[in-house]
Length: 438
Image (cartoon, rainbow, N blue to C red):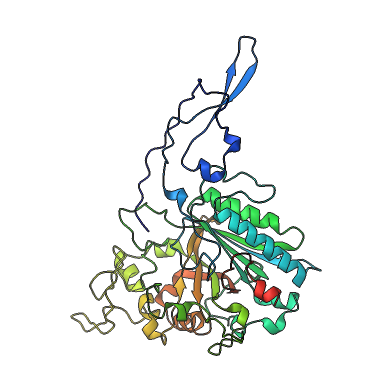
């Protein structure tokens, strides 16, 4: 992410000579308000009456460029997958209500898509906007929609359910809360401003009406863009640089690993994965709430922490030497003949070349939900990974981690979900239209 400095905010002085024809704050859109500050003053007259007027800002200089970032809603792929990490995130799953089926789901996705399009452009919602984000720009807002395994039975679309959406197998590290797992529909919201993100969450929830109810909802965060002297890989709540080996859109096989291939001219299934045609250009999201046992982790020495991960905490470089991006030497030994990168180090086990080439695009948020009664922090990672096929992506990697990852004793998987995320909506379409109207 580009480094962005944020000047100190200034409060413009009230201009008591403002003319009656000056534009009022009420006549400005969210986009026009970006980077300006307005105020409405009250002047007490001789008779004690209050007279209101629209004050003019001292200068129309933007306070920051952070809010100006905009991601397009329409496109080949849905937003919120390949974009960089965002400062604030909300994950929410819904279940369709009794009596709601395919027709109601189509109406809901059409409404959601229009709301997402408007909010991502920095506009207000079509109806009953709460004004929470009135003063802000789009702030790189993204809203992403997906379907859970149960959605297809509830809508009579079982024949269109992808085989890749079969439930994930059980793992030994699982301590899953079923009430905070799965769901018919899944929405991922991300933005670089907390109020913009909350505004989107509230708008999506209000849009459901009587068609669906919230099953679970989680809140996350990342470092804000511009918080470091130069762009760098993010750190998690353990203090470790996290995401060094993430696939990059510039990789020659990126699309093949992350997105479902497009259908042929006849609209048949993808022959490689047997994915239905409506999933063309889509992806599969695995969502895991991973609690970090921070009190136990922080009792380890720095050396012990680095051996668990297999990388230096300071700069993310592999213990075998070099920089963060230097390839890890798995065979390097020390003077005593011991492997420099321990055999059970997390970074060793998760390497794609140690897992048949399995690649995951990790795009997580950290979370902190307070403290338990005994003062233990309820904090960790809202792990989100994207892949063209979870059976060839997440599942083999997690199985290998299950068998001997040194990090496993310091984390606990407490919630899980797998969602089919269709390709992006073209102009005039809504997300999932090919499924729901096909």
